Length: 148
Image (cartoon, rainbow, N blue to C red; front, side, top):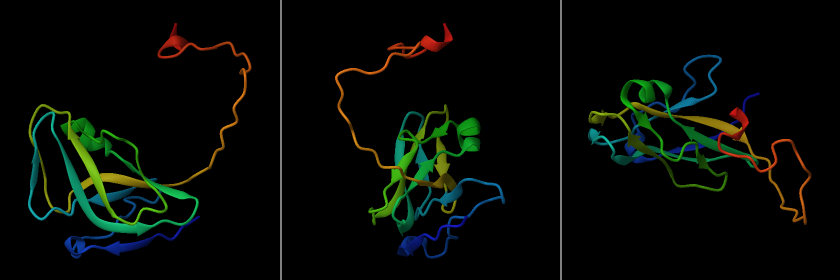
């Protein structure tokens, strides 16, 4: 199934390609850095990287912004709020918070693939308050309790 996303290029994205799937089976589309000049992120530091794109998502969808595994493995580049969510009613520029968890400075050049975007359906929930919950074998065990 293919869903259409309305996209507006901002002036600093005019010469960059739109997000695209790298392969026929890819779940994510690469987001590119629309930086005017290279941005160097020192170890332990973060930067807000513009994409130069604004979108109007169809009702019932979100755009998840996720890290690229190659950047994480080779350079320690992660997205601290991953996955980031672009809501269907947001019309501002998509920007990516990039954190250098590596041990060397990392430079982002114009047009670099900095993240991937995955379109996902959203299921809305309504809270229903109850006096008690049904019992399970796990009960309230959390944070590593299933591996003991």
